[in-house]
Length: 513
Image 1 (cartoon, helix red, strand yellow):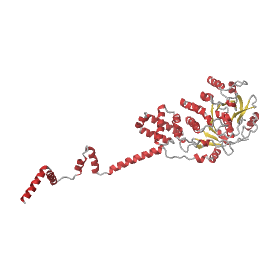
Image 2 (cartoon, rainbow, N blue to C red; image 1 turned 90 degrees about the vertical axis):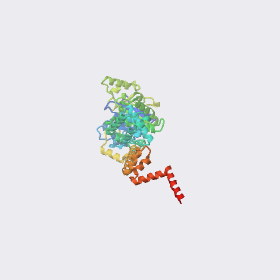
Image 3 (tube, one colour; image 1 turned 30 degrees about the horizontal axis):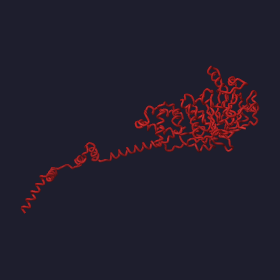
Image 4 (cartoon, helix red, strand yellow; image 1 turned 180 degrees about the vertical axis):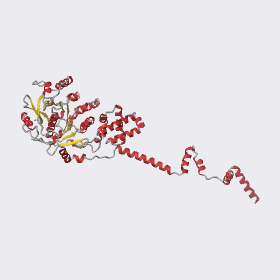
């Protein structure tokens, strides 16, 4: 019999078990419903089930409630008796409180271990999406990545990219001949967007040591899958940064993990909360990328579950790939709400026992309309389901408890300290310093020249090539009258007339002798 995760009781009396089969868990899923209808608890019990089955989980904690996964529930909780009664009603015989092995992560490094990647790993497409660049600006960003690759300059953090853009601006004339027009206006616009990204905390995302995906796919000593919780309550203040980071993580999983076909259980399950942020104002090329990753990543053994208020938030092509669905109540106060409710109901396999549209509208808190994949991946008949109670604590843990978990984690020594090795910023800085030193050396040499050498250099520039005569006149001592007369006589004697005179004088002397 295939292993499964018990979700709750189905049927009129909720006595029929409704479960998620692990073999089909990598075929993705959807958790939808209006605010306050129980999406967070459903996410919590799914994370518990996957962890117990030895499947690592990555999820984002948008409201700060999911940290309770790290602590077992308590008999003193106000809902203790309600949980016990529900467990009996749905036939959950072995219900008990238990904690999950948890690792906390945080892009800002405050509520979890720092999560970093490099600018190179993020790539120009996702960076352009993150900064909302125009087509021309995205083109310059692609040029920057190409130049960095050809020049051997690693792009690790934002200051590397900023320094490289300055260098590109200074050398835009040469680069434009090879790559096309490089305008200073576009470079300036990118630099301003990078500044905004810095102000939103994006500096913390880029750097080393970069996150290794294997650290998200660990199990504890008992074989339970690690539940990786990304603290996202502050991150939601920069929704584009949040969505881009999760999309990058999904893309990295797709690129690095090997093909495994259809495993008995997933290698990792990825929960994407507030999924509508991924698709709002997203260019078509990015939506196509998400669709491609969602379609192909299941063969890598990764299951992706989107959590959103309304199924209409998910593009239709992607929604069609989400086979496991938990639909909490939807409100229908306006014509648009009713239309979305009807569309949501039409995506389920009908159950003759009840009207799906009415059920989605009527289910209470802690209830849902569910449909799980069955044998051969066929969607199951839609069922009204009473969701099982969680075994871990409902609500957040204390700050002291969080810090205790962080300090005892092996990830603290690996990711706790930022490393800054030689990269594009340092390489360009070294080049600039060398150029400045060469210029200073040349200026110093110029100042140490003698007055005569500078005059010689000046005369050489304006002599038209007659350097010897010009310089000899400059360097010659002031002529005297006697010296001038002697030189004139010697010059004359060297000539034809002079030779005749000499011969005449010598001939007369010999004849006389």
